[in-house]
Image (tube, rainbow over all chains, first blue to last red; front, side, top):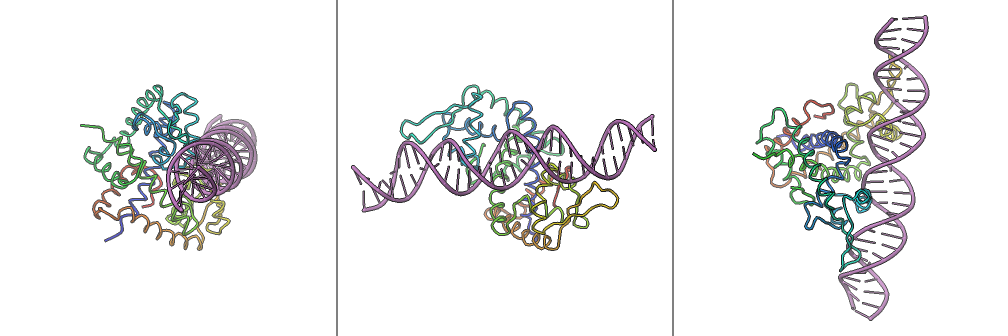
Length: 148
Length: 148
DNA sequence: GCGAATTACTTCCGTTTGCAAGCTTTATAT
DNA sequence: ATATAAAGCTTGCAAACGGAAGTAATTCGC
């Protein structure tokens, strides 16, 4: 039998490039958000009390702490997130979703969902889409950062 | 029925992040190549006469022409690629794989394949891997830049 | 208790990227 | 034939990123 892992990963890389291209364009045009900014807001929305510390966010986003610092700054300026301090541990500074940010996430999620469905417009059954979702989910099942 | 497109795309984005993290690390450590550099070399390897013009490369990689110019420069300095001119059209400058580059691609592809298989080590059947590959391939079937 | 190690966060620096502008060469229209 | 448009490539500029280093606060070891 042949090793199918390589073509699967190669297709994954290519599919991501194409998906990110289209999603980024739509989100930026409609809501003025980059894809990564929306993902950050979505992680906050999913978190308890709509807030996460910066290192927790970094783990969710699989990125560095310095990137979170710089990604959150413009969102804070726009009033989409706020900054909370921890009474017990003064090192922690939470990023918290504001009502404005919550509203924007809901709107942008609709754009995300609509744009996502366009990738499957032709020649896809619901079972195939669900199957792809299940397989991709299994690929990262033990790692942090799931939005589902 | 529920809309499964969103979770499928969300899982795709996350899987890509994790895959790129591990692949980049291994390729960089073992061969001193970034993932994108290897993909560029692989597109050359697959092309007729192991060469492509810079705009053709840009289309394969889904990136801009200026990025190709800058990505090819260090590879040329390392002797992995060369530069050809077109006798008919002086605007074209081809990027061509050298024997040294060809050898490095073969070595790095082995690393790529070995690393790819680690993502499926546990709880994956050959049919499931092939199924994932087929579904991801169909997602971008009409677009340029396939390595398969 | 108290110094040392660890953690959280920010800032600095080098790298990578896309877009816009520019240059050169080729194609097109009249 | 010539002016205009288009294509291919490169460079300048600004934005985004990771890692290293720095600062402040907490925890650990004894």
